[in-house]
Amino acid sequence: MIGATHRTQRVPGSRLRAALIGTATVAVLVAAWEAAVRIGNLPPFVLPRPSQVVATAVEQAPLLGPHVATTATEAVLGLAMGTMLGWLLAVLTSAFPTSGQISHPVVLLSQTIPTVVLAPLMILWAGYGLTPKVTLVALTVFFPVLVAATAAIRDVDAEYSDTVAGLGGGKAHQMWLVRLPASVPGALAGLRIAATYAVGAAVVSEYLAGESGIGVFIQRSRKAYAVDQIFVGIALIAILSALMVAAIVALRRVATPWQTNLVST
Image (cartoon, rainbow, N blue to C red):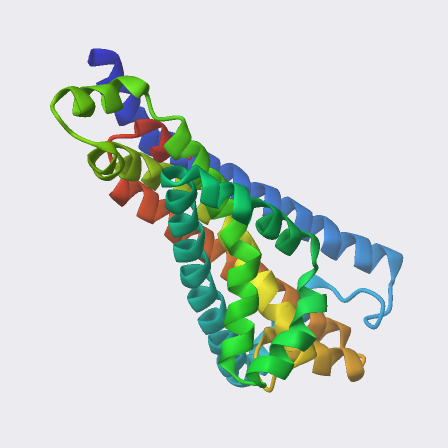
C-alpha cells in the first residue's frame, strides 16, 4: 500500500518530465530544420523554413478555421462510430464465438483494402457530404478497438467469472458483471491507437471528395505550388491528432482510475 501511494505521488512528476523531454525534442528538431535550410540556402519551394511556415499559418489563419473544424468533425464522429462498432463487435464475438468465426474473415478483408480505394465507392453510394467521410474514418479506426477490447474480454481472470457462477449467475451475468467492465480498459487502449488514424483518414477522404477540410487546403496548396501552406496543413494534422490522443488519455484516467499504470502513460 505504501509503495502504491508512493508511486501515485510520483506520477505527476513523471508526466511533467515526459512532457518536457517531448517538447525539448521537438524544439531541437525545429531548430535543426531552420538552421539546415538557412545554411543550405534551400529555396522556399523545396523546403521552407519553420519560421516561414509559422508566418504563413498566421497569414492564413482566417481561412484555416473552417477547414480545421470540418476535419475535426469528421474525425471525432468517425472515431465515435468506429469505437462503438469495434466494442460492440468485440462483445458479440466473445459472447457468441460462432459469430466471431463468421465475422473474422470479413473484418480482416476490410483491413486489407486501403481507404483511398474505398473512398470512391463511399462517394457513389452516399454522395459528397459528411456521411462518406465519417464512414471511412469509422472503417479505419474500428479495428484497433476491436482487437484491444476482444483481448481484454478474453484475458479476464477466470476466477472472477467462477465467483459470479458460484453465486448463481449465468453467462449473461458473467458478461455483464465481469467481461464488459473488463473490456473498458482494452477498448480505451485501442481507442488511443485509433485516434492517431482518425485525422489521417478524414484528410484522405477530403483529398478525393471534399469542399472543406485540411485535405482540401493541402490539395489547393499543392496545385498552387505553395509548399509552405502544405507544411501548415501537415502541422495542423499533427496538432489535431495530438489533441485527440490527449483527450483519449484523459478519458482513460477518468474511466479507469483503478489502473494506476495508465496514469503515467
